[in-house]
Image (cartoon, rainbow, N blue to C red; front, side, top):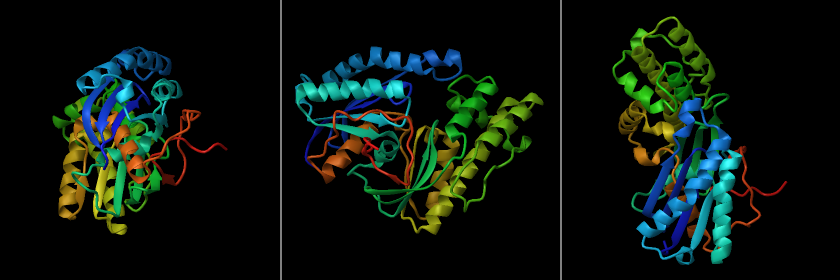
Length: 343
């Protein structure tokens, strides 16, 4: 694509991220992970937005310096996540990017956070072959999508209650592994035996593209209260979640004749999920697109790549500066453009 310097900002939850891209390629990146929430056992929205306000300007300066930019006037396009996410957090990144675009007299693009996770795989060095099936699995979302192209992403099903990442974090907190605890639970599971703890598999039918993890979380709580060993419970919980995710993903891949499988979101950092996905896609002769662990969680590179995809299709694309943040996404077709039409 035509060389384009994109400055992307991501502040949808508790991570502040900035990236400078040349087209789809990262030139410089910075991510600040807020640690203040661990003492509260969960993300406190007000603290998150205040932290973004404090951290974002410094991160932008670091990225510009690292990328050899002399100022915002050298940026061609500004992009920021508009939603879904925590409204206060979203507004920080959105307001900063819109103001910067206005001051520099450059285009601004509002980006859909969910689509951005998938667009981490939008890279000319490795092209996705369509049709594809995508699994988006994070702390706030667990969904399956059919992708006929980058312009046609259709929802197959989502979780009816807790997202997989939320279930991991809450179970980790329950068992004394802290918050956020998905990574700690993954490590604890390595030394446990999943066969020593029996957990149910809610909505496990592979043909059903929807998920439910609330009951599994409750079952884990009951076992923990009965004295189940932490490592065994962690191993059983991890295996149960991974089995459900992968079985549904692979069923839809076979049903729809997919040539590629995409996985995105924070839970894709889970070691067992990565291992099983590689095994299943290899045996099914499917091309697997899996982000590196650094880009599994929220980051600004994915926002920039979503913007690059929009601009490659329409070089004159831009979002109105009146575009506002939105906390939730609903619909059946997912677009990288994060400025929904006014109702």
